Image (cartoon, rainbow, N blue to C red; front, side):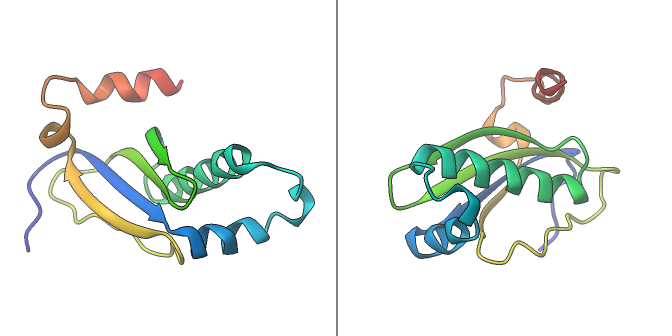
Length: 117
């Protein structure tokens, strides 16, 4: 399916409870962390992984319910029309890839990237 021509995109990734536990077990040095700290750490790690493909990627929100963690990340493609390249996220499930304007129709995507600096 061809992708719409958009420079700015929203990616939504999720970990379910089983994968969240698996990823958390890698944090042996931080076993005393509580759930929010683990979620913060995993969110930061995911954003860094996405930023390897799309420098400047920024987390614009997450949802935590004790069993699942979902993370919404804004990215800017290098060139409009290039296919999105998202791979190598192992246990993270990619739930959604949507042009920025389809979700935030009244917002300027450049403002999200300015906030990160």
